[in-house]
Image 1 (cartoon, rainbow, N blue to C red):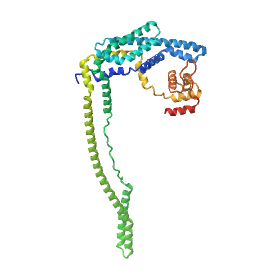
Image 2 (cartoon, one colour; image 1 turned 135 degrees about the vertical axis):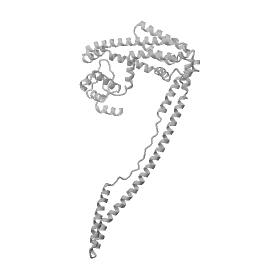
Image 3 (cartoon, one colour; image 1 turned 90 degrees about the horizontal axis):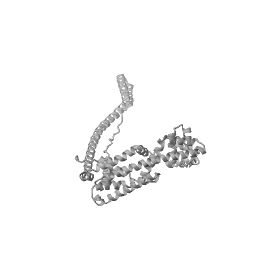
Image 4 (cartoon, rainbow, N blue to C red; image 1 turned 120 degrees about the vertical axis):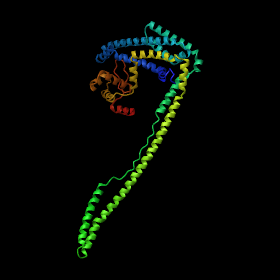
Amino acid sequence: MSNTQIGLSNFDRGVSIFVAANSYKSRRLNEDILAQQYENNQQLSALRREIHESNEISKQILQNQLKAEENKEIQRFYKALSFNLSETLELISKIDDDLILYYVTTNFYEKIRLNIIEANDNLEEILDKTFTKKLLDNLNSLKNKADLSSNDFNQSALSKIDHLISDFKKEEKRISSIKKPSLELIEIKRNRVNILRTISIVILGLTTLLGVLISLGVLFSSGPIPMIIFLLLTSVFGIPFYMLLKKERNWRNEYDKFIKEQKENRIQFDTNLNRLNTEYHNKMLEEKENLLNHPLYDAIMEINERHPDFEKWISSVNEIETTFANKWGLTDIQDQNKGKNKLDSSFFEAARLVVQNQLGSPSLLQRKMKCGFNKANRLIKQLEENGVISEENGVNPRKILFANLVELNQYFETMN
């Protein structure tokens, strides 16, 4: 394995490019990029603020200006996307290994085709549309050329690499989820030292000793009464003292038994824990050894031997994608989409405000919640996505989809 030039991380990075070639995701991604461009455009933000504060006639004028400015952003983005696709196709056309060409075109074809069609639908200039039509022809030409190698590809390691990487990752995840065994040491409950009993023994012992001394003094006096007093004092103080001593002795015996059992229990616990740890360690070594024998490694070796330029081409395509992504803030958008389902901490407060006032506008939230314009817009968007208010409809106000707070609270319960 030390001579393998293509590492797992490189394969993973390359294949991840093609995993995302889903048509819906591709279109949604372009929409998110445009939405972010709108937010970053200060002129658009200023126009939106003016629209919220203007009268009906001014709103229509500003609305037209807003659409014109948004259209500029659309044209700018789709022109850039077209040139990025052109650069990608030019790079793919230079691949001189037929099986790598088949691998790339098969995985990338649908994503590029849909992006070209989307760009063509949104671009307005004839030259731009002609350019995208040429891109589509080039793409289909590459696909036809690559399809000639389909039989050879199906017999090669490249045809299995995606599945092997997926299976390898599942095995890694399964192994990492194996938990180390744990044992709970069962403590035997023991009686604590009874301080009251100890004090009673001391007091009764001293009292009994004093009583015995007094009784002995009386006993040497003449008559039967001293004997009765001696027996009485001895009974009153001696019997309780004896009982306490007996109880203390039983407790001491129990304590010694407890110490012995606890030691035996600890020895048994340590023995079992060592046995389980040894079994776990051996199992993990066996699992990792089996993972090292995974067929993915053989496939990597075969690809490295027969297709030494595989990593170079994958990295080059990846670099074009990354450059375009960084330029248009794609990384930021993907990070935002990870937490897209997470509601703003002020979401429920905002929902109650719009329902209570029957008005769904950012200005209401800014005024009532003392928040900024961006947060107010974000809350309005979340209220729309979660069915509290309707979509934006030109200059018309949004509809509030709940008549009162009772209905809203019932809806919140279903959300939770």
